[in-house]
Length: 442
Ligand SMILES: O=C(O)CCC(=O)C(=O)O
Ligand SMILES: [Fe+2]
Image (cartoon, rainbow, N blue to C red; front, side, top):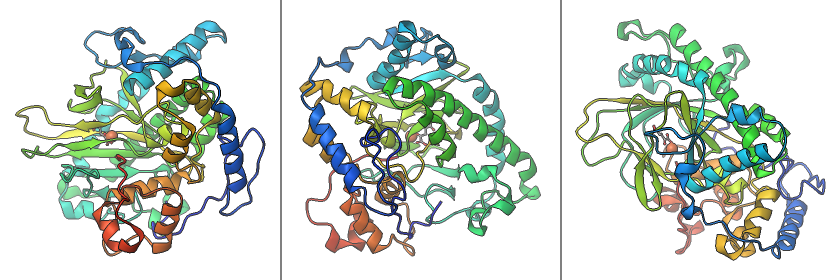
């Protein structure tokens, strides 16, 4: 992943089922996607007239969605069963039910026995790695490369309580041999540390096998989701094969009274796959109430991130969640969210089919053409969107802040709406008084 100082510009445009694809518009390599954008806006205008009946998701009986499994709090599905159904009305209804559940609840569970079978082994390896002295782990602090390496500095904007956890991120680089990586990409693997019982030869294959399993799980999920959202099916393989997916190994430390393990946030990326943690604690916000997420054995959690919310024109919202320690609990917790992430050059223009559906749901969906244009920074790329969110979280070191021209570029794209005090202080002339539109982040 690029250093955050590098000025990133979209190299390619669209091509992912977003507005403009249908007309086969190829924007020149380099910055401008103006033609595509204008066509997109024109298309949006044509869609405004199509007002159909609205769906009120707060009225949906979520207990009737998916498989009925006692003691669970979110809808459960077997996507492999759905994928094996013959084309026809029954399949269409089953796929639509998955999308309805994502829209109504924000979190669903899917059967994923191959992922679940590996989780305990991953937690064991995480214990041997995170229990090493801090100085050992700090060697893998990839300062300012954004969601790679070890770190323990982060929070959520608008929430000044820091998270009480350490994390290590793995990207697709973890699957490459060291000799195929640039020098600054090679530091993903901690060195052996026999005096503290850490053996990288045991750790590395457990993590890489788990990463690969999660990627394949993501591939089958995207196929069903894209069928339901009306996105070209071949996009699922492209997104999976080119996306810079991030596996976070999260080590939650002894609870500190008055703090949360991870404060309320939405995930930054596209779609999160989360296998059972070593301990409960995950809660989602539904209708203003924090609700425990409990899932049956053999199932993993799925929730949409900010990038899916944008690409789906708000159809699938990034649902706020947090992690709190059970009352009176002493000890640690291990968790392994996999953040599927769009290819870095993906233009964040919403998919045409989702715009059509959202505008079709009419005034009751709260979406108007103007609202849509104001909400989504549709010229930005996935990497610009991600980095702007990381800056908003203060995830850069003071000695290497973002470059001024990059901040200007993000602003001109409608990003960095919630810059935070550090960015505002550094670039005070760029941020006027009313620059604080809230947006939540991971
Ligand atoms: O640890 C968990 O259960 C959830 C973690 C999470 O929400 C995140 O890392 O974004
Ligand atoms: Fe999260």
